[in-house]
Length: 187
Length: 415
Image (cartoon, rainbow over all chains, first blue to last red; front, side, top):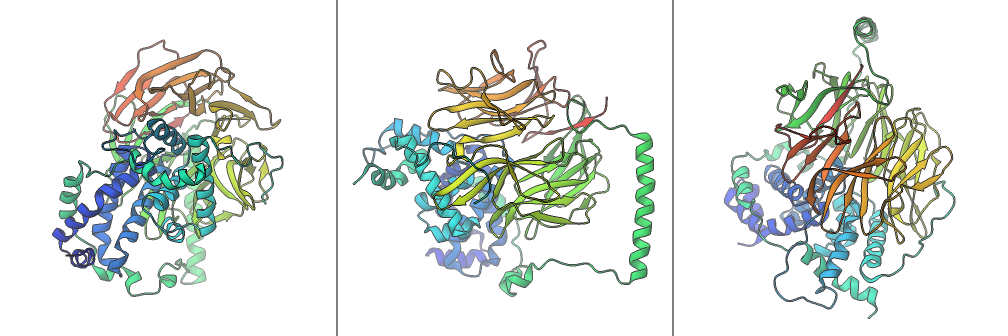
C-alpha cells in the first residue's frame, strides 16, 4: 500500500497503518530533530510528542498527500517549542560514528564534521531548522517558511546567515562584514 | 566549482553524517503510546469545515448589562482591596532584585505543577487536572506563579498564588510562545511569541485585564526586565545587506528601543545576554571570527564592554553565563575539547573554580544560582541528576533525589 493509502487508513483510526507510517518516517524525524535540537534526549522527546500529536490529530488532515509536510511542520514546531523552553542554554549533539565510505572530499573529513558541528551549535534552533528543512529534508524555501511559520524573507535571511556561518567555520570563508558597524536604530 | 559551491553541494551529506538515519530505540514506545490513545473525532477540527480566518477570531466578552458590569467591578474592587489589605498586613516580600531568602522549588511533571517547600520535603502537586501545564515561574516577590498551558491557537499564560490557588488565565494566546519574564513589580509579564510569523514582544497585565504588543521594529530575543523596569533584549533588524544584531533597551510603556551596543552583522557578537540584578551590567558570550566563546561584561550606562579575564584562552570556550544575585560572581559553562563543566569566577575574571560533574561535550548541565546566591542548582540532563553545588567549595555538594525531568524554578522570599 502506498503512503497515501496508509494515511487514509490511519486517518480513519487504523493503528496498524499508522505504525507503518511511523516506520516510514521515524528515522528521518529523529535525525532532523537531533540536528535542530542538538540533544538526543530532547530529540527523542520531540519526535515522540510529534508522533503522538500526529496520531491524535490525523483525522484533521484534509489532504493525505500533504502528510509529510504536515508531519514535518508538527515536528519542527515541537522541536522549536522544546528549544525555546530551554533558551539560555546551549545544547549539543554527539558526533555519531560513520559507517560506510565518505561521499566526497569535504563530507568524508571528520575534522570538517566537527567544524560543522561547532558551527551548527552556534546557530540558534530557528536558523538550524531552516537549514535542516531545506538541506536535509529537501523542502523548498517557501515550504520551509510555511512550515516554521515565518515570512519567506525571514527564512531567506536565516538561511543566508546560517550558510555564511557554516562556510566560515568549515572552509574558512570570511564573513561578508566581520566588523561591527556603528549605529543602532532599526533600519 | 568554487569551494563555496562544493560546500553547499556537500552540506546534505555532512548533515546526514552528523545525524545518521537509523530507527531510534524508542520506536516501540511510540507505537505503544499511540495505540493506547484515541484520535480526536474529525468533527472537532474546525479547519475541516470552517474557514480558518473565523475559526480563531478572538472571543470578546461583553457584560450583559451596564448594571451587572458595574456591580461586578465594584465587588471585584472591594474583594481586591480586602485581599490586598490582608496580604499586606501579613506577608513580607523580598526586594525584586538582589539576594533573597530561598523559598520553595517548583517543577512540572506529567502536565501538573509540583511544589517542594524545602529541599528535604516531599513534593506536593499544587496545580493538577487534564490540562498539560508547563513550567511554573515565580514572580520576583515570590507570591505568584506563572504557568503555561497549551490551548487552541498557541499557549496561554495563567497565574496563581504560590500554592497554586486562584489559577486564572491572562489575556491572549501566544503562538510559538518562547520566553517570559515577570516585571519588577509583578504587575505585568512580558512574553515573546510569534505574531504573523514574526517574533514579537507582548506585555500582559497580571490582573488579566489586557495584553498588548510592542512595536519594536525588529525581531526580539533573549529579553529580561531590568531593575528600573525597562526591558533588555537582543534585536535583529533586516537590512538590504542581511540581518544585523545588537542589544537594546525599551520602555514597556512604549517608545522606540534604545541601542546599548554597536550593531553587528555577526549574530555571535552578542549571545545569551543576561543582566545583573542591579540592572547596570550585562554578561554575555561572543563567538565571531576573532574569539570563540569569550565571556564579556557590558556596562549598560557607559557602553564599556570588556572581556572577562582568562575567558576563551588556550582552546577553552565559555558560554551560558549569568551573574550571582549580588552581581559579584559569574556562573558559566566551560568547554574543553572533550567535555565541559560548570564554573564560577569573579565578575572581572581571574581565578576560575570548576564545580560539579564533568560531562561529555554533548551533555552540559542546566544551572542557576539559588535566590540567596550561596548555591548553584544544576540539572544534568543525560543522567537526570539534580545537584546543589557550593560555588565556594566550602561544603560538600548535595545530590537531590527528586523526580524532575527539567530544571526546577526557585521562589524568592523575604529574610
